[in-house]
Length: 178
Image (tube, rainbow, N blue to C red; front, side):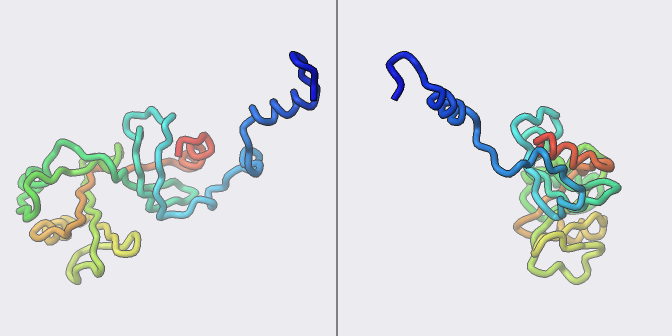
């Protein structure tokens, strides 16, 4: 033991080790490759993200290639009612009249996509693709019309999408944004 008031070299080293945060494998020294990120996957915006489009966002990433990445913000509602949007398109809404559309992302906000849950997509639903087991996506107006008459319990009208250019998303992940 060291005498009172004086720290030995060993005590100093030990306290420095305690004060230094523990690190796992040398993550910083191994660059992430675009192929390390495999869609579909959920991306969670970390607290340091201040971009108003992505702050506190959860993104369902559906495509990630060398050319870029594509997905939808899935946790942000708009103030627009689905019934009002569909009425403007001449489509009747058979769901909850207060249901709000979601903000899917800042890219092409005038384009709507429907994300919905169904064990099996309706057989005559144009352009419906299964993106995760039991989760389907369509961007076809005829598909929206069919689904809106009797919407499934899990139905989300997404306005816009999220997109990243080549290398942009990987760069953001390495910056610890996601």
